[in-house]
Image (cartoon, rainbow, N blue to C red; front, side):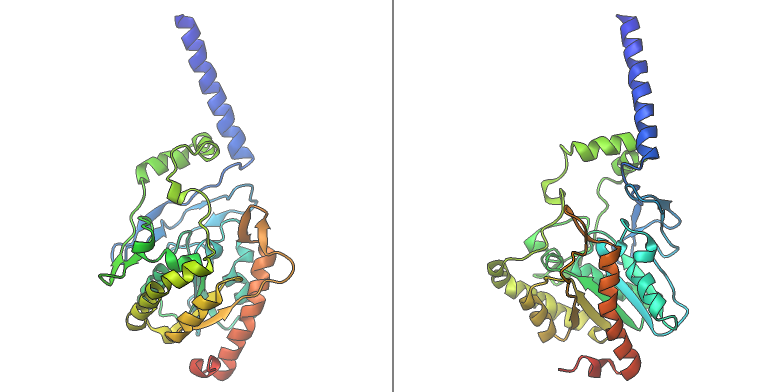
Amino acid sequence: MKKFFIQLVLFIILISISGEIFIRTFKLTSDIPQRYIEQNTGIQMYKPKQSGYYKEAKEKWHVNDYGWLGVANTNKNPLFSIIGDSYIENLMNPISCNQGTILQSHFSEYSFFEAGRSGVTFIEALEISKYLDSLIQPTYHLIYIGNGDFNESIVSMGKYNDRVQIDLSKKYIVKAELKSPVAKKILYSSKLLYYLYLRFPLFVDKQNKGEVNKNLKSNELEFNKVKLSQLFEYCTTEYNLNKIILIFRPKTDDDIIKLSESYGFKSFRLNEDSKSWALGKHDGHWSCYGHNEAAKQIIPVLDSIAEIRDYAKLFKK
């Protein structure tokens, strides 16, 4: 019996080592950059100087000195920040497909600085803009946003401990918390364990399992109109709206856009052509094609800013 258990343990160790090597060789799981909380703002950022591979990717991602993935040019004016969630983080594509990289190739005389992270809410994007104002003083903020990012900003509509939200009743920004940092560090360090975790997510919080539904139904929007109005009203007093351009993803609800504009936000909605921008059937993130098509629509907006040099006139109705 003792010999059997020894052989069993050795077999398990051998299988584990083989599995670890196989998964790492063929990149069957993604390397996940470690996060930390910026103490003054409560914003989750990435620890600088990390690198790794997204699942099946050929090119590494890199975290820059500022704690973000993507371009971080600050030496020319005007300086545009590009803020958003996983669409801007863009781990699944090479950096050549990032919005900042594509726009920089068209505007060599400008600077672009990307600040993207999966899970960023609308209110968190605005908090990031305020943080960047004190750090690198951008001329304008391009905030890429979609339907669900507004509801996810409001505590009373769903609590997300790992995201910056707002308690509208108290007009108070709720800072994010790291979720099980020690357990995650152990999990991410073992590719085999992480692979099994992804294949058999028995203990994943239902709220955070899978992709969050980004599409508001019309009756939900009507029900939430009061809260969204309160959210936008708060923004008018806490953030410099003159520097902010909301870049709405395709299929964003018209009512959300109109409501935001009624509170002074300047906006531009992207339009998806007949060819899908998505990476795949089960992944709505933009492919390199999608990122290039989105950037093509942003270029005329930035051209107009350069030509007019008057932000208010550009968006005057």
